[in-house]
Length: 211
Ligand SMILES: C[S@@+](CC[C@H](N)C(=O)[O-])C[C@H]1O[C@@H](n2cnc3c(N)ncnc32)[C@H](O)[C@@H]1O
Image 1 (cartoon, rainbow, N blue to C red):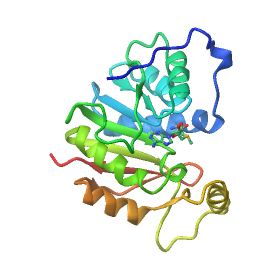
Image 2 (cartoon, helix red, strand yellow; image 1 turned 135 degrees about the vertical axis):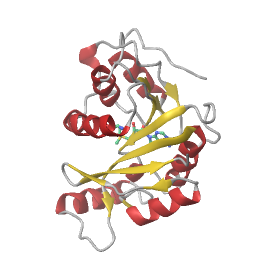
Image 3 (cartoon, helix red, strand yellow; image 1 turned 90 degrees about the horizontal axis):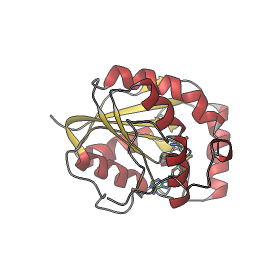
Image 4 (tube, helix red, strand yellow; image 1 turned 90 degrees about the vertical axis):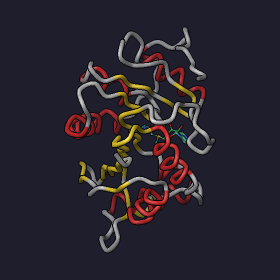
């Protein structure tokens, strides 16, 4: 498994910082606490700045957290941010679109990902769902956080503006339809549950690997 260790050049004040990740860490933690067992082994996909890994693993020392990222430079950031946290494993290089993922099958209690699907081509969505289905234990959970388009509901103005901006930046990006994500999850062998409303017009989607 290709792990990348912290760059000795990166100190805590040099690390990229996301205000949104800081704001949403607490509500995400609250939901994951309700869903996961006290000794959960969790794979985080697209860890970004590592702020979710840092906050959530610090708050739940019984969980083991495996961060991952597609970008090599982000791996060094995650490693530096989580340095010294005994329950955070060295970050793993993982591009969801490169199958198979470099992980054992049926190894994780949960897979968590935030804010990936709208900032990647549609193909990343079925790839995430298929990869998660393979590496989750029977009965394990995939939790997907972010803004989504819900059939029959108008987009909040902030999400509509975000969607338009994403599509300008890259025509393959944009908010995903909840129904299409759920259909792709069923195709991957996952069972969708009712999404949970989260602050700032986000949702947490939940999918179960069959028991
Ligand atoms: C908007 S950031 C979200 C970071 C973090 N999850 C958060 O919510 O703050 C999107 C992240 O997805 C990562 N990413 C993009 N494409 C990816 C892929 N194909 N596989 C894995 N990660 C990817 C990017 O490197 C980036 O760190």
